[in-house]
Image 1: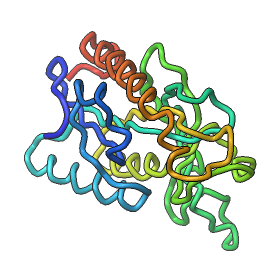
Image 2: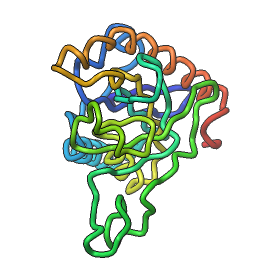
Image 3: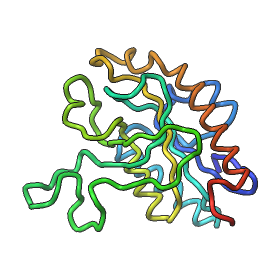
Image 4: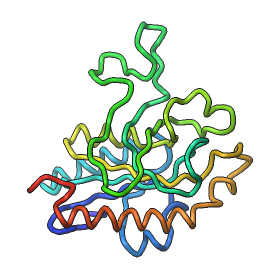
Length: 212
């Protein structure tokens, strides 16, 4: 399994793209790479969890790591998601609230109750578009990414808890190209590695997961 065994607990790490996986994280974890966007995130997370279930080796925890955009939060700082929303879903023409998937018994915003002590929290919006500039004004959540809600749905299907850690790579200024996204990734790599160390300490002390 791509992941870690911490104090007898199996941890599965998921990341979207290689540029986010720097040397500091490489020294600590080996993630499964999902690819970018909610479709790729859902496909790979589901396939990975299904394969592990078939082996009788479902993880005790899934951790999704990577970058996020935000026009409100401190750039290059790491936050853990406290709530998730799916900004692509809009069935309002059928009478459903924005963000609510028709005929699925879920609210527009779901909470992530498992939280790492000592890390700041923020609300996260997932969607297939890269958000930039004035587009942030239409989003209620604090930060945006492209995979977390999809990964959460896969985890929910297999009854595995999820923690989402995101470093803020951009958002204070409109994006003008790929270099604007990658500019802080080296700093974010270091800070995500620090967050992973905090997470590991909490898991190994039994402060995060229920007794096995």
